[in-house]
Image (cartoon, rainbow, N blue to C red; front, side):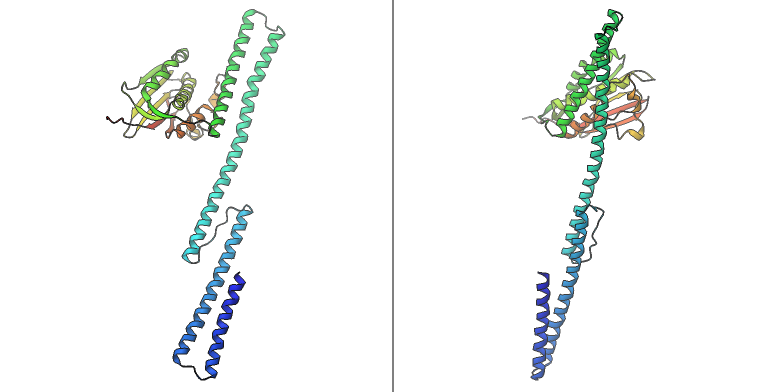
Amino acid sequence: MSHKITYLMILQITLICTNFLYDWHSQELNTFKLVIFGLLIGFSVILIANYCKFSNDLIQVIHAVKRTLNGNLTTRIFANGTPIFNEMVFSINELIEKLEKIQVETIQTHAARKSLLSSISHDIRTPLTSIIGYLDALKDDIAASEEEKKEYLNIVSKKSNNLKQLIDEIFNMAKLDADEMPLQPDIIDFSEITRELLIEYLPEIKRSELELKINIPERKCLIMADRLSIVRIIENILKNAILYGKEGKEGKVLGIELKENDKEFELLIWDRGPGIPKTESEKVFERMYRGDQSRSSGHSGSGLGLSIAKALIEKNQGRVWVDSTPYIKTTFGIAFGKIKLTRT
C-alpha cells in the first residue's frame, strides 16, 4: 500500500511537470500559470517528504513494538511527529510501561508463591512429623506412666489443632485469591461487635495473664461492612496481640480502643510485646511473614492471620496500619468509614 501511494505521488509530479513543459513549448505559459505550477510542485514535494518521514517513523514504531513482543519491555519510543502520531506514541509507551509493571509483579508473585509453598510445606511437615512421633511412642508403649501418656496426647491434640488452624487459614486465603468469598455489606455497630468478640476471648486473655485496657464507647458506632469479614479481622488481630502481648517486659497488657475522626471509626488493638522492627513493618501483612520472635517453639501462629485480615479490610473498603516500638507499644489499627442514619 505504501509503495502505491509513493508511485501515485511521483506520477502526480510527473504529470504536473509534463503539463508545464507542454505549456512552455506552446508559449502559453504566463506568470499566473508559473505560480500555480510552482505551488503544485512545491506542495507535492512537501507531501512526499512528509509521507517518507511518517513511513520512517512508523517503521521505527513497528521495530520497537516487535522488540517489546520479544520481551524487551524497557523499550520506549520517541515522539517527534505530528500531534496525532505523538499521541499514538504516548499510548504505546504507556502500554509498554504497564506491561513492564505486570511483568515485574508476575515475577514477584511467582517468587512469593514459591516462598509461600516452601513455608507451608515446612509448617505442615513439622507438626505432622511431631504428631506421628508421639503416636508411634504411644503405640510402642514408650510412655512410662499414664500421666506421661496423657501428656503425649495433650501435645498431639495441641499440634493437631494448630495444624487444622493453618489449613483453615490456607483455605480462606485461597478463597480470597479466587474471589470466592462474597461479601454481604450491612450496617454494623462497630463498638458492639468489638465488645462481643472481646468477651469470647476473655478466657484466653485470662490464661495469658494479660491486663486489659479498654476504651470502647457505649454509643453506637455504625459502619457498612460484611459482618463475617469484620469478625475474622478483629479475631485475627486479637489473636496476634494476645500471642505477643504476654511477652511484654514492661507488663503483659492488651489494649482495645475505639475512636473516631471526621470520616472514620478507628479500632486500635495494642500490646507491649516484642513488636516489629521498623525495617520489617511493611512486611508484617505479607503471607507467611513471621518475625524472629515468632519462630520460637512457643508460638503457634500460621503467618497468614494478618495477611487475611488485610485482604478482608481492603475488600470492605477499609484501611489498616501498624505502629510499633518494641516492648513499648505495638498498635494495629483498622478503620472503616462511618455512616449516619437519617430520620424518616
